[in-house]
Length: 281
Image (cartoon, rainbow, N blue to C red; front, side, top):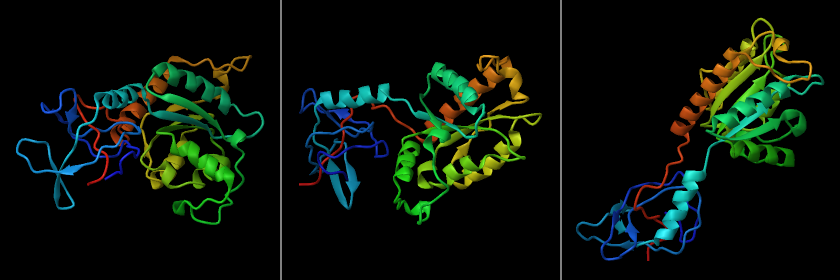
């Protein structure tokens, strides 16, 4: 049970409440929404007929009332929030075309409207080859570049890896970036935009799916696979997609949004709820 004045997160329990006629304009019950600092609201053990109650640690608890303006604050935060989609450019060599396809896909993702979209360029990140002494699962990072990278991945709810195909596989720099972290990747959907020759980068994607599954990520079946990619880049360096590319991009975004809603739900606040915070008197 969180202490009074603590921050409520998305993963706390939820029950809808009822209006309490004894406290006009206030509500009882449970609610759950995005992080918000809540005023003091101690819980009082009560066992009265007809009240919303819950058993916790062998005692029966009923919440005290919370002002509706706090409920409205949580409701607005839930309505405005979108999951964060990070588009990761998985190549760093000079002359790469990954940023061109990533920029095109970013525009599709913004137009889709289901995500707040971030573009992550591993060439800008400049991670050295893995140099942390402890296993990433321990979360005992000593280097600032690891801490910063961990924050980027942690705040993201879903990913799209933009990857070329090198010798039937994916790039070393992408594997290195993935291996830096562990728990930060878990329980997040991931899609792939690949490009190459006749195979359209699909062999790289098949290898990546094994890696992300080991990290408890959820790869979606839909993907964007671009064969003979130079035909889709004009003289100015702008991607000129065909219908198959745009349809597959939109389908992948739809599936990423659907899966993200299932595994990382951000539940809107129910009608007439109350945030259960505080500690027993």
